[in-house]
Image (cartoon, helix red, strand yellow):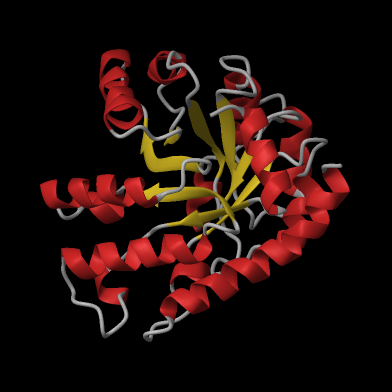
Length: 272
């Protein structure tokens, strides 16, 4: 799936929402069985309720991997629920020596046919290059994350005054292009997003941290949108756990629709 396809879908749905499927057995509504049946029914109904507003879906693989081989099957089944036109992200944060990264890429791009995978740049270009070799696939590189520990490394400055996240953006941007490379940029950082956008003006950004983590959609859009809009804003808990009774899918739909409604003004502002 190419950048132009994502932009077209944003225009069509008047939304740049990425819905995160971070499904937890313990948070399933009480009427659903706490097993594979309940887990998959929940995912299927959440997707059915939100797809009209979701340009993308992000599956956090850890929530599935914890169940071993069964969990991998649930992940593949959940992937099959996602509409063809949506941008499908494996939030796996992979990155290792070249031949290992090749195996990770094959697993997520060939076996499961995700469109994109989140990656860690810590080990350098040879750890990300295997992912970039796959045609019509995208890597989403960690740059500035939304967790409290981001400051432990990402904000450290070198002798020239550049923060680590700035060096990551500047360097990694040279390894790919705007079709096969995006960056993760935490939505809790506000004005810092302006600097990030200066360094990577044309790349799409995947922005977590909206909603449950306290990030503001307005701050993200006004600080980080570009001429293509260039944003996929993720919401996970705020949508899929908007309700915990038998009407949970309706509540998820309402939460997604509310975010999409807020997003539509920015779509009309930046994409004409």
